[in-house]
Picture (cartoon, rainbow, N blue to C red):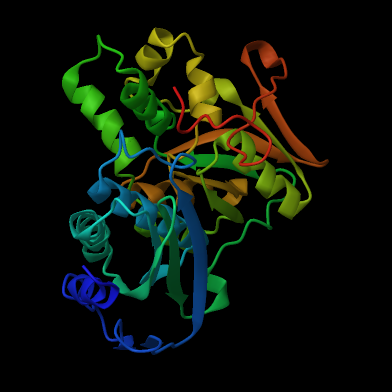
Length: 332
C-alpha cells in the first residue's frame, strides 16, 4: 500500500472527541482551540530498546506508547487532550500491522477522551514510535511539577509497584507455577498500563507539592524530585507496596522483589510529596479516584536519594537509564 493510501486508512480509524480540535489529521497541521495552558510530553519507543515484537503485539504496542506519554500529563495534573504519532516502519511491515497499532492507541484514546490528531509515517530500518501527548489546564495553580518538595514533607506513592517488571519477566522467561489469572494481571500491567489521569488531577487538587510518574523505577524517579527540589529524598524500601504476584515471580527468577519494585519501572504509578497538614486530604483524594496511597519516606535537607533497607541500612539501587546500564527492559 502506498503512503497516502495508508494515511487515509489510518484517518478512517480515529475519531475527534470534545470541542477543542478544529482541524485534525489530513491538513498540513492540526488546529486546536486552547483556553488556558497547554502541557506537552514527548516519548520515543524503539524496537529492541523499549519493546520486542516477539513478546508485544502491535495492538498492545499502540496502547503502551500512548499510555506512557499520557502518564506524564497525569503526573502534572493536566487533563489529556490530543496526541500525535510519528512512526518509522521497517520494510516487512504492512497495512495490517499499522492498523493494529492504531486500533490499540485509538481504543485507549477513547477511554481517556483524547483525539489522535495526526503525525507522520516514514520508512525506517527498525520500528520506532514517537508520541506527543498534549494536555490542558485552566490555570497554573492546577499543575504540579517535580520541584516543590520541602524538608519534612512525606513521600507517597499510589497503587502497587513491581507489577510491570514481573510481567516482563513472565513474558521473557516463561516462568511457570503462578496462578494463571494472577499471571495474566501481571502481563497486563506490563503490556497495557493505565495512566492515572483522574488520580493525578485529584492529587494536584489536594495539595501535593511535587509529583512524577513511576516510569524508570522509584529509585531513579525519586532522584528527579530530589534534583529539581534541591533536597534529600529518603525512602524506606520495606514500605514499598508490592503488586500481588511480584514476590513469587522474583523468587522464581532468583531476584529480590524489592529490586523489581524499586528499580523495575514502567508501573506508571504516581510518586509525590506532601506536607503532614494535607496528608489525610491526599489519601482521600487519591482513594476517591481509585488509587490507595502508601507513605514510603521523608524529604530532608541535603541532596540526592537515600534508600533504606530493613534495619535502616543504606542500599544502592538504580532504575532505568538509557545510557548507563544494560538493556534490562528487553533482554531476559
